[in-house]
Structures are given as C-alpha cells and as structure tokens.
Length: 167
Image 1 (tube, rainbow, N blue to C red):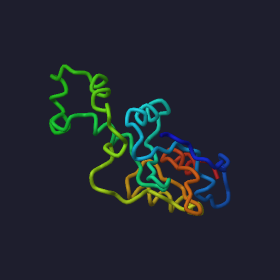
Image 2 (cartoon, rainbow, N blue to C red):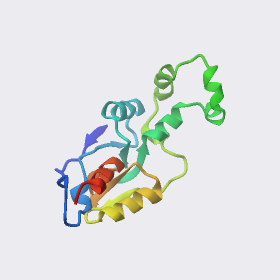
Image 3 (cartoon, helix red, strand yellow):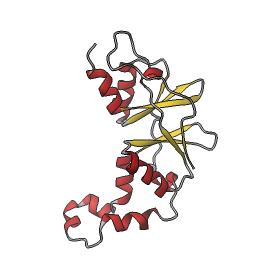
Image 4 (tube, rainbow, N blue to C red):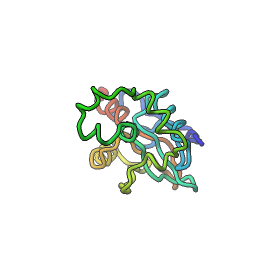
C-alpha cells in the first residue's frame, strides 16, 4: 500500500526573514508500510526521483526511512559490493536482477537488519535542529510530526534550498 500524507503542508517562501519551523519546511511526501510490495516502492522512488521513503508501521506511525541507497545496496550482490571490479565481468544486467530480486519481497526486507534511530523532527523544530538530525543520522530526509501524525517530510535538498535562499 502506498499513500501520501493526508494533511496539506505549508511551505516557506523562497526567501525568509523569520525563524522557519519544520511545518513550514515540510512537503507532502509518499508513505509506504512495512508490507508494501518492494517493487512498487522502488518504482515510486524511481519515478519521483525520491531520496528515500517514509515507512510506517501497521498503526501508521513512522517506523523508519528507506533511503534509495539502501535499495541499491539490496540489489547489488554483496560479492560485487566487496569487489566492485567483478561488476565488469558479470554478464547479467542490473535491470534484469531488479525484477528477480524484488519478486515477492516487501519493504520490510529492504530495511537494514539492525534498527536505526528514526529520523523524525517536530513541527516546530528550526532549520538547524532539522539539519542536526539529518547530519547525525546521515538521513536524506526526515519525517515531520505534529500531534503524533506525519504532516510531511523535509528532504536534504529542501533544507539546502532554504539555507542558501537570500534572507
């Protein structure tokens, strides 16, 4: 199941003078659950050129972020990751492998085996607070929460857009 954030999201103007909070930076963002078909999730990542997806549990609460880089890691055989020179001699194309590796797989299986801290910020967090969470967790996006609900997401590119905008 793939859904989008249900609430409308307020976005900040290109240039701002006041303190900008998470809710103003947040953008509507697709959400998938742990049992979403992996191929469907990968198609969403690819078609919208997303840096990752917000993954929710069965109750709709944030569970994790699935970075696109983690999907690539899942798709590339570990022996090729260990020795990239092998990629030159392997006959099978990555495109052919994608369909095979994703068949019957859920998003849950694409996630790292060890749980990581959830990249979540509050709706009233500042730009610097959001940046600190992204940097510390090395996450390409964070879910923005208000009253235990996801109200959107902030991507690293959105954050950078706000940081470099003239004040």
